Image 1 (tube, rainbow, N blue to C red):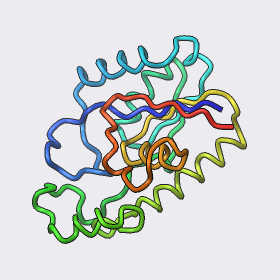
Image 2 (cartoon, one colour):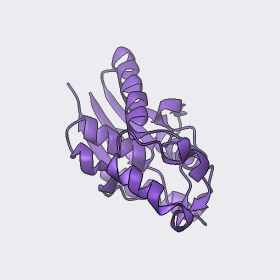
Image 3 (tube, one colour):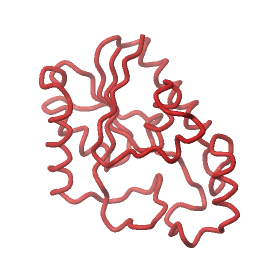
Length: 180
């Protein structure tokens, strides 16, 4: 099975903000540019037959709809971004430094803002992957978020789990997983 993990387009008005699960907007130009970039990163013969999945977030669904067209993508709650609980919608520099440090010291178990830990996101990722393996053994495109992609890459052994939080996942980037 081959999975292309795609990060959503850059949202607007979120500079310096912890937005995790907040439904933030994406400008039409950013959506079009990201779709064009993603299409250039995935082999052209792949998309017509690939199953396309998406986080339920509008910033992901909008891109997934363009990639899947004329078909419809399948929304999957397990592909949602990490929940940052009470941190959602707050500027990163306004968060208590000791809480940020606690998260940095225990990336996999700490629950930022009382939301989800990276381990909880990993559990969702593995549940989705297990479900996917039961219904599909072909090529899949999943439009999702940086947190989910980092966890997927770490669990697949492609990046170091302890430094996963720092691994760059640019907007519109495509990350390929080849799974047995």
